[in-house]
Length: 323
Image (cartoon, rainbow, N blue to C red; front, side, top):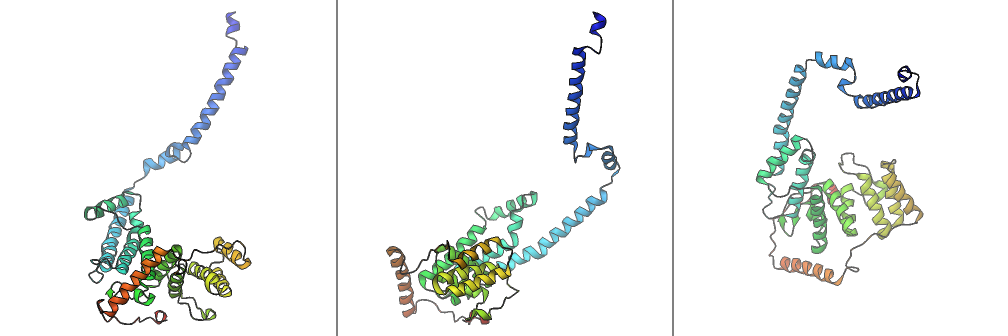
């Protein structure tokens, strides 16, 4: 009996041995999975770690950080001081000055503020000492550009004057072509299509005859997107053939863009083309029409009575802004 019980060939002992071997195999697979890509995954990795001298690496990192801080001191702070100089006064909340100040701030600091490392956290902490409220965001910039477009529509201010920073006789910061693109896109989203067309046309320097259009490689905004939006507005309000030509040019500049290709195919076939919302005087609600009329009446009366200050501003120097 005892001999039988100790026999390794017995069913009970055999089954126990099989299960133990299976469990070991499972443990091996689990261990190899946990150790994959880790230091203790191989003796060679451990030996390398034990022999490594990282002193020079840490010194190199310190030098890198010194250089990074030097860049911040010499470039970023200088740019902030330049963009927030006394020549751009925000005391009167001038629309173009507010817009330009936020654009400059986000252009220089957006990536740093969104940095999820300790550097980004500490930067936000230091800035919040003197500005406990919100810092400018991309949505704020979009709202500011939309406000300029609606302000223009309400008071019937020319695009040329706003680009110069001249709004109702008060001087603000001047705008560049990228600003025109942003304001045009915001006006498009707000449904002010005539205003959007004017701003986007100015941004891309659109000639009277589209066949003479030439791409300015110095532009810093999305030219193909601007042309696609101009094409959509022209297709609906002005000239369908011209609109399609603008879209074709947009595709020529960005042929791999799937969204542009899909939009162009819809407009070329005339199938499933969505009518763009268009806020114009004829279609707007009565209350909005009364508000716009009141705004323009105030401007007309003030101009007649010379109550709006005239700063004798110079004409626009750039040839593309004189049209």
